[in-house]
Length: 115
Image (cartoon, rainbow, N blue to C red; front, top):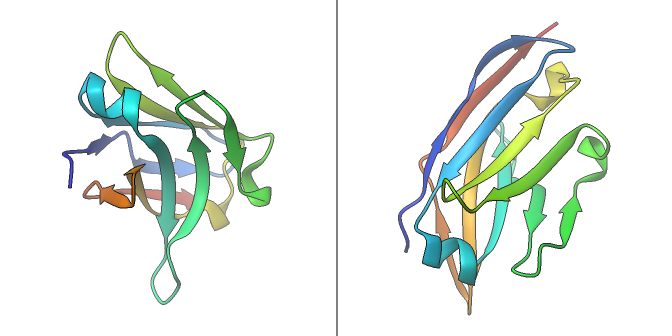
């Protein structure tokens, strides 16, 4: 397990934007596949976006064109810019770091989108 600290969640109206950040050490960001997942009560945690070590990105179909995952090397963060938010984007968002079979999670940050 590696330390990951999420921030940036909150309450926003549909159509609005939020930016989530996941703080980690430079070494973690350099050597792990970083991802954002979300979970709602009664459902499994689902992939939202992934950023590989080589900076390839992958998105869930439901967020393509609206969300952007990126790495900020100056601030040692992985960010998730969320635009055109919908009520179905509501959930707890978790940062994930994966390397060599070891998966680490942050504590999660709540995102609530009102209609």
